Image 1 (cartoon, rainbow, N blue to C red):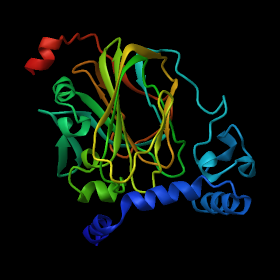
Image 2 (tube, helix red, strand yellow):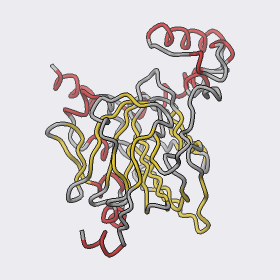
Image 3 (cartoon, rainbow, N blue to C red):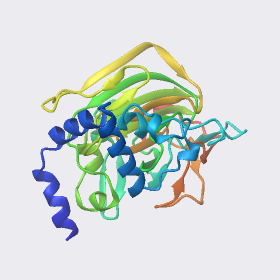
Length: 293
């Protein structure tokens, strides 16, 4: 039955449905946005007390509601900044370390770092990277923040499919995260390079970045697009980086040996924005070590 459900996703006009959903969800027609918002709140455990605007009727559209900001008291940054904090509210799908350029997707499924990042040089850098995959459920806060301070030096849009990214699909569709549409952010940090990948999914209208605005190429786009910043853009730990128009997945990768994941993290662990996920290590990995690994 699970395979049957996943099979039907191959037949759906994924991009068309997602772009249409984006149009509907951005509508400011009062009756439509109220219908969508109220129906969503009835079906999902949305905590409006955490929102900057707690009144659902105050939002101009469903998208505005879905990408709502949190109030200042909802999440507190840790005092110790020598750690990796969660960039999102979500759930741990996988956590661990890449092995010979392969990342775990689900039990019995792995995929290539090269394919995920769509760049062979980056693939070599993160060949044996500590990584975690974070799934954002519909009711979660959908803005993505910086897990550590860093300088944005490159951003890559990778066209692809828009399969669902829930647990069932991850167990049944090979190379899921390396097949779906995604945006890759590459940073220089005090502990080496870091990649943050925002993976699109069915009904995700687009990814909106702080630097380049909305990234939503047409359904027939097949070309990888890259932005390289000769003057890297500085982001502080916890600063907002981007947001999903609908829910999806974030994958974090760090330089080899740079972080130790906290031992209480495991598959299905619920995490919240700013929650410490890993500690910095004192090990220094040189570029020669990376290329030779």
